[in-house]
Amino acid sequence: MIDRNDQRRLLEIARRALEARVRREPTPAVELSGTFALRRGAFVSIHCRGDLRGCLGRLTLDAPLGQTIIHLAGVVADSDPRFDPVSAGELGDLDIEISVLTLEREITSIDEIEVGRHGLIVEAGDRRGLLLPQVATEQAWDRETFLEHTCVKAGLPRDAWQKGARILIFEAQVFGED
Image (tube, rainbow, N blue to C red; front, side):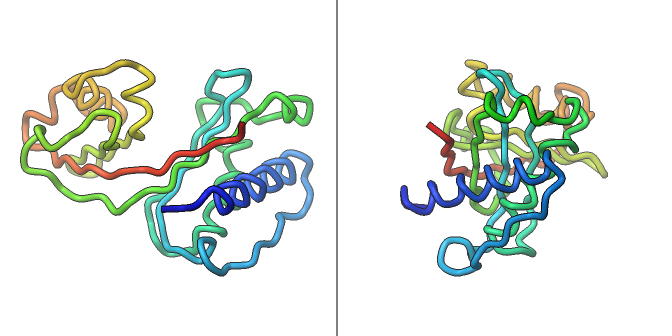
């Protein structure tokens, strides 16, 4: 569990990395100790006046959390293919949200999925889709709808979860700028 002070520090470094990327300035440095040294998957989402403006993540544990957050907060400014790059004029209207993930685990029954608590990963062949826990809550989805949308995100048929696709769950500690 990441305490409030470290959450604030992670959000501050994410904000600096986002602004540096948009303004084409050097990436900020961070001391990689304590929480910043943890090996965790994470996502950085940005919202503009409440609307999603970008969201990118990393599941691999190959870098310390501090480096992962700096990287994601920078690339979310211009690398989410669903959105145009962020302009300097938008920076004041953006809010940052960070999701720090637990390790995923495969489930044997969809009854193990708790909407609002678990995020989902659906895999089949070389296709993989992931949705964060807060997505199902924000959209007021039930378990089956959440599974269907995760399949679609993977580029699979909506019912792939019923036809042999692997289902994995994870949890996320989610915090954002006030």
